[in-house]
Amino acid sequence: MTKKEVVQLAQTFSDIGVTPEELLQIATTTKYPTCFHAAWVLENILLPLPEALDYYLPSLIEHIPHTSNPSVQRHLTKLVAYGLRRITDRKAARIFEKEFWKTNLEPIEDCCFQLLVDPYTKPGVKAHCMEILYLLSTKQKWIAQELPFIIENQMELGTPGLKAKGKEILKFLKKQSQNIKA
Image (tube, rainbow, N blue to C red):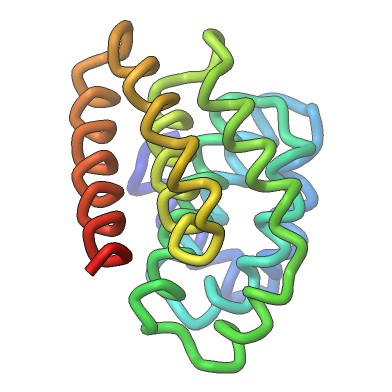
């Protein structure tokens, strides 16, 4: 499928009432390529609708640890990174923000750390996991202490894109650390 076809399919699914939750259920199956296409369509439904992404963020987070397909992981971690960015930038509705921080985030933290250090994880997934962990570190200070070492280690053998993302996150972590000390 092409990007244009996926965008059209996302519009069609939205028009006929297929919910993001239904697509998420399909995306987390092991039936390839169906799971990949469902995740890709889901991304193209939720990214243009940030308020919907706010609503489905806890569900996305819940499903990532149970996803083994690298392509699906890339789409879901991208959605979670965007959703978390909305929460930390205070663009999400306050109700979503309050409820989000009450969620048990330990499974997604553990999953992102595991994906980040796994040598078989695709670079795109690692980059999104770096961002997710950085964004979680705004509330979970222990992550900010552990993350720089792991990122530096990943950058040594990483792709150019992963190295660039690592530099960006390290810069943010350093700034965050300086703001805490000030």
